[in-house]
Length: 129
Image (cartoon, rainbow, N blue to C red; front, side):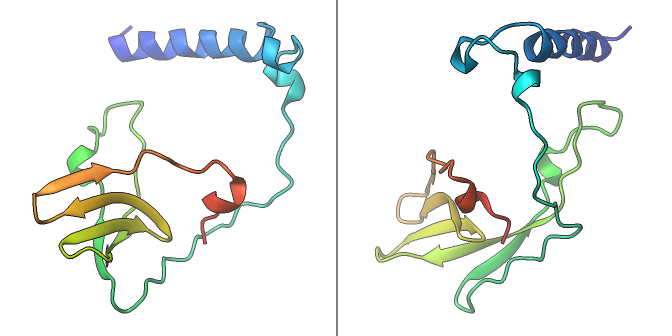
């Protein structure tokens, strides 16, 4: 068995214990499997591409530079994404956005890219539209 197969088997065994056997103090010593409920919300078959404002500079990011080899069992294909560069109130600073979410700030004055670390967790802010 290869290294990746061993890692996968170990993870699968750990996940089974974590979700079905190990009590969790945060949920009253229940196991997560006892608390899990399927979502009643239907997943769309296709998510419409983003519709950016005319002033935004839009580029495709396909993730190919970071893609894993095709024989990697953990590889997850990533679809192309349209990202927008938006101007800010400060000259030389732009925001890199996906839909309405700011992913990073680009400072062309100093050649700096600063990630945006805060991701809101409220479900309405994570909507695909």
